[in-house]
Image 1 (cartoon, rainbow, N blue to C red):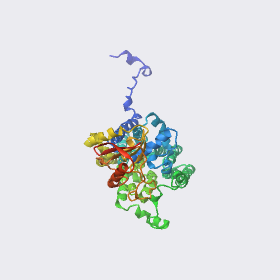
Image 2 (image 1 turned 90 degrees about the vertical axis):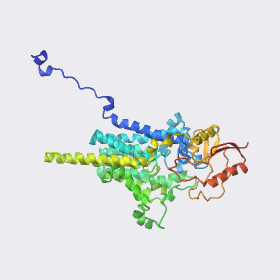
Image 3 (image 1 turned 180 degrees about the vertical axis):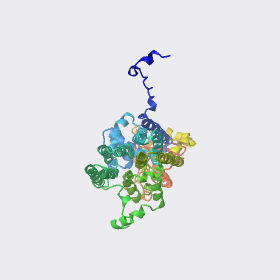
Image 4 (image 1 turned 45 degrees about the vertical axis):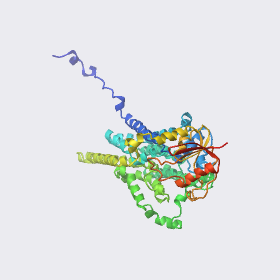
Length: 512
C-alpha cells in the first residue's frame, strides 16, 4: 500500500536532520579536555609537594619574590639571591611580569605552581589538534597521553616553578604552525622566547633556520639572525648590567675545559657524550616518541638546548631531573606527528597509484602502540608516580610542627629560613636563606669560612631531612654541622632568643 509520502516528488520529501553531536564528542573539544585534565594532574602533584614542605626557596621562593615585586610595580629584586640582587642579572626572563596580575589576585606560591601547571598542560592543545587532523582521533589521544605523561614534563611540573614553563606552550604552537607551513605565525609564536631565558634565543634561531630551509627564506634568515643576536646581547650586555658582579652569572658553566677555545671545540663531540649520563639523557629525550622524532627535520629545534646542556660543566644539566627537558618535549612529539603524518601521506599516494591499500596504517598503529608502552614503562620512575605513593597523602607530625611554628612569624617580618621552609613564607615576609651564603657562585659555599652575623628578625631552621628529596642530596647550602653551629652562634653570640622548638624545627627571634 502506497502512502501519501510515496506520491510526493523526491525533492519535496523532508529529510530528518542529523542528530547533533554532543559537545564532549566534538573534535575541537579533545585537545582542550586533555589540557584541563593534565593541568589538574600537574597541579595536584605541585600543590601537594608544597604542602609537604618539598618545595624550596631555591627556586620557588626566588621566583615568587620576583613576581611579587612585579605585582607591586617594583624591580625584581630578590633577597633570597642576596642583598639588592636584581633577578634579571641571573637569567633574562622579563616575561615573568606577565604573571604579576594573576599573582596580584592570588598572592601565594600556589599561584605560581598552578600557573605553571596550566602552561605545561596548554602545550598539549596544538600537538593533539595536529595529530587529530593528520592521523585521527585515536592518534590524538596517544600523542596527548605521551606528551602529558612524558618524563620531561613530569620533572618540571614536580620541581618548584621555573620561567621555562612560559616557553613550552609558545614553542608547541610554533611547531604546529611550522607543520602547516604558516611561517609568519610560527615566528610570531616563537619570538617571545627571547624574553623568557637567554639561551632560548638560539631556539628561536633554530626555528628561523627551519623556516629558511623549508619555505620563507628571507623571514627565516632574519629570524635566525635576530634570535642569535638576541641571545648574545642578553648574555654579553643585559645580564652583566643587572648582575651585582658585573658578569654573566652562569658563564662558568661553559668554561674552557681544555685550556683554549680551539681545544674545547675539538673535544666537544666526545665531551657531549661523557660521562655516560649524557648519552643516556640524549636517548631518553627522544625515547617517548619511540625514537621516531629523530627522523623529523623538526628535531633540529632541540639542538640548541641539548648542545648547551651537554657541554655545560654543571652536572645538574646532564641528567633527567629538574626542569631542563621540558622545552624539548613539544619538539619530540611534534617530530613524532610529523614523521607519522608524512608516512601516511606517502602511503596514500602509493595507494592511489597502485589502486590498493598499503601497510602504512598498520605501521602507524604499531608506532603509536610503542609510544604508549614506552610511556607506561617510564612513568613509575618519574615524579607523577608520587600520586600513588602513600607518603604523598600523609601529613606527618613534623610537617604539622613546622606549620605551627611558621604561623607564629608575623606578616611583614624579615626571616632567615631553611631552604624548604622559605617558600612557606615568601608571600608575606621578606625571606633569606639560613645560613646566608655568598652570592658569587665561584665561591665554594662549603668552605667559605665564617658567615656574617644574621640580621633578620626571625630565624626558622629545620634539621629534619624531607621524606622525598629528589632535587638536592644532603643538607643545603652548608653541611648540617655548619648549619647547626650557625644556629648556636645566633643564640650565643648574636642575641637571638629561642621562641619554640618542636620536632626538629627551631624558631628564634632577635632580642629587642
